Image (cartoon, rainbow, N blue to C red; front, side, top):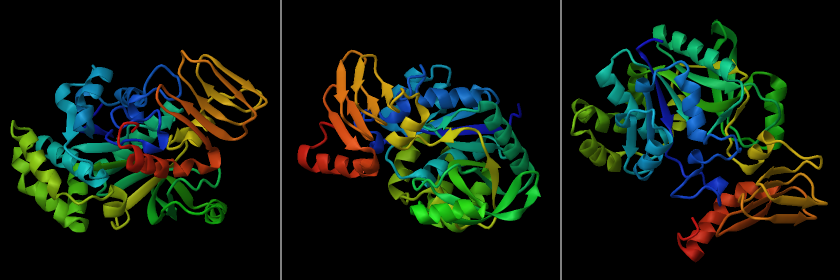
Length: 360
């Protein structure tokens, strides 16, 4: 293991599309959604600890979740939990860890990954990560991992890449496209030169800092001004001062779509962003009627292709539903057509307007 290799696990989101089991005070990255015995953030940590030492793994999360991280990842040094005072999307999050690491190690080589993805082929994932780290250790490039698409998914972003490799299995990126409609997604897949955007990035921190300076200078300026306070007792105070000044923008939109030194590694390692109940359905075992069930006491009668998530202590009897999401918690019951699950975020906003934050 190179002492220059680091990992930043981004774990600050709310996961509102997984409401009602994902709540503001206990979001999905801290849940065992697939009933594996490990929460999503624990599984992500387990994946990286195989090839990056614990002292080089950092968690960036919302300040209210620090205790959850500490409890779920006792192996992680507590000083490696970086707390954001507010949610400002992924660019400020990446800037925070990048400027901090640059002060510690000017040659730091960093993987940035979400805490809530599913990866089933961990050996293949480790190989791709090591290949990416090797490439960025000697090329001034920004790497994104691309997933070879298996179907025309409209919930993912797509990345088009150049036909000729610049290194073994590394290609220059041509274009980024946000979530397309079904027909466009089919066209992308038929063309053969589009990949799903996994949202997993690899770069040397000095190179992403240069990219911030060029493409989001207003963000770079506020971090640069406080650079010398990182890794000191004043760091927390400084972050409290910096974040209100940060633009709310994603790293994809702020940097990756604008930079001219972005590369991609086409990959297949059993990836899902687990962003919706349908993606959960895809990753769960099914009964003979196509129902995916999480819960010890669920009875299904004349119902097909549903995803059902219920408390292990509660008996749930389901009859006559087809292609539904059914989620039962102690204070909320959600029954929603699978085809309407993208609207769950809107339902949550409506609940907030009408019921306040009690059920969020």
